[in-house]
Amino acid sequence: MSSIFISYSHKDKPFAKRLAADLRDAGHTVWIDEIKILVGDSLIEKIRDGIDSVDFVAAIISSTSLNSQCVKRELDLASTREIDEKRVIVLPILLDEVELPGFLKGKYYADFREEDNYQEGLDELLERLGPRTLPPNLSSAKMLKPYLFIETPGHGWLRVPLSELDALGIRDKITKYSYEDDLYAYLEEDDDLTTFVEAKERKHGSDYDIETDMFDVFIDEFPLERKRMDEHRRRNRYE
Image 1 (tube, rainbow, N blue to C red):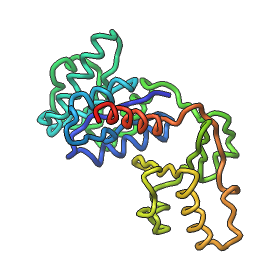
Image 2: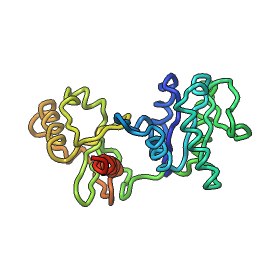
Image 3: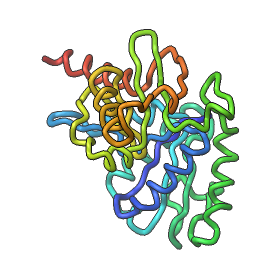
Image 4: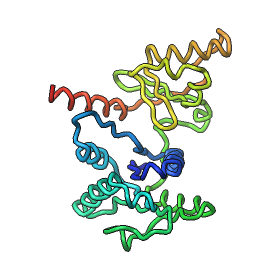
């Protein structure tokens, strides 16, 4: 499994989100729109933190991204890291009929210029990222269950699709102690998990048992929680 930062122009967001979902389905960790900028933060430092924490940077190259100052900053930082580490980090993703910019010239790219070639381009990208890996201690039978409970030494979170929270009408009731990515909510095991279970009971009856619909894994550290704690420590340093 690899971790990958997707650099793109927001005009290319539909494609970027589709690609992110497919990479996650293949078992990889994807950063997309996860850098939170607060007033007074250094934009470059925030971007550098994100890029430095991943294995690869996927650069979506299009007519709009070539004119994006944010994409240019991200590529500058990623290319510097590639030179320093003397290994492939930046993976060009060609979306339009444009020339690769700067140091990307001469690199082999994943070709997504034609919709019919999407799967071929994705397969080439996945080959570079490495083989699919599954969470620890999972069997195919367990994977048939819809919810994943992630347990750490100190806490736990239930992963559920965001679409289900919307369907149950409780997305706006989830507290700041839970997390979201593009596809899932990670509900902390106290109040938010209770809110979810109560909504399921209202829909399916009081006999509903969440245990029958979830499987669990134990990990040493939950990356989203670690990210929040690191941000908290950084803020406190300057208060």
